[in-house]
Image (cartoon, one colour):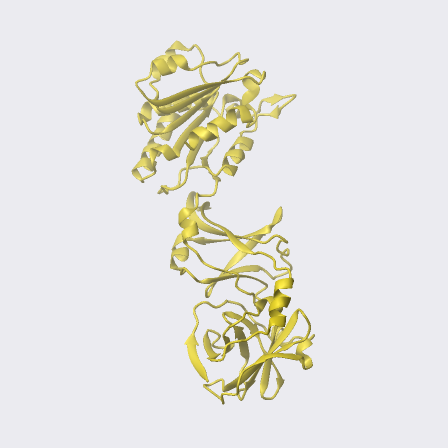
Length: 445
């Protein structure tokens, strides 16, 4: 007997006439009978009667369905479908690999025109022990949802939040060929996906948050190539997204509105990155390239606000603008402890003024190679927040910020670290572990 169901957990794929034609057909000859159902008589519009599973070899299995209909069929094992083709006037056949077979699976049929309206056999698939042993002996590759996270991409002139789903497979994904593309399928919805050419084991798809919200927990997930059928490997678990820390990214400006979950880090570079049209170049360390520092912070999971230093910055105006942006972030619900302002060399002057203007005891500040004996500037600064000072012992430009701390009225937490690289003020040129690791730890405390 049959019963009719409407499946929501089914793949989205495109089938063409060549796909149904299958020029090389291993199912053209009878195979070894593995399982079969009783003839229940023609039921429903598809008038299906029974199914029979045959083994062609250890990797190839043919599922044949008796039917009185001339419709174009899909044959399903649970919620995984393959296109069927007619071998006899009263029978259609679909080819399945070993790993698609499941003990106790429901066998169903649908027409290509109404692919999600399934008619299922009541008699479940019963696999013999020989097939179970064959599956256990066959190596199976692990494909999994490795991450669901919020990322930011520019929509117009402003960064906007999106959801990125990452799938990983040890052997990697095939490169894109011609017009064929990867597709991530979740339930009935398909998303164009891409493969990182430098990490071919990683496939990702991006969608807006409204689309993600409409997906259902438990929807089957599969990856297909060129629109061909694919076996589901997981169920969507939205809690992964809720637990996820936003993937690190680099932005030129603060998202509007700012999401409260990420850790935000403003990186303010030194004069050597900001001045004129010539970057400072050290024979041993190379150019002062602040982008290397920005990407190192991105790799640690921060949403890095690195809009680039002004070529001739008005320090006070710049600091006032940053303080206003941070106030807006706080109004958007971002906790103060998730905001860190890092200033290096001249950038630390801006950071100290931001601390002064903001007057928030919960925001984090990191001052690197910051403080000199400038009495006029000391009189302008009143530090607030959680402040980490890092200086280099051999630096002949900047040393301890103790005077600024002693003169402050709003410091909540304070720490100062002396590093000893012997590089003088050049220790800022690269994200050296001596100062980079303490900075990251302070921003994540």
